[in-house]
Length: 182
Image (cartoon, rainbow, N blue to C red; front, side):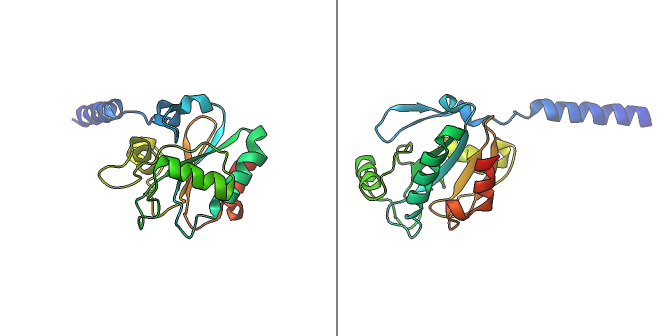
């Protein structure tokens, strides 16, 4: 009887494991960039990626400067910053893609890739943010977006490593600086 129960349990565990889909990597996603062209994350294979939801009228908006500094300083170390404008918090990103691009360029000289404005929470959450925020999809952690400028760290293999709080400035974050330097 014990052997029968044991066999049944192993079979059940095997079915459960087989039924679960492995978490996708970031490389499986394509999005629209701020100019309307397709951006394939597969083009970033082998790079460390910092993804951040941005807003032009937020108290955290000055983080653009540090994100740009990281992008320029560590590009040779295969680090890239990707910005996703979103209007989910306090309507702090009301502009069009063109207005957002102009704001970023004029005020912070942003050269890192900016994507088209999306939703990072709620029923209309972009698919890529579903992956970033839900352990059931990314296989690592649940990290709902709490506010503008939440940072997600993706390793060179396309796997989510961590999420850094919105109010933590990028260069003041030991987690981000350690991530970049490893």
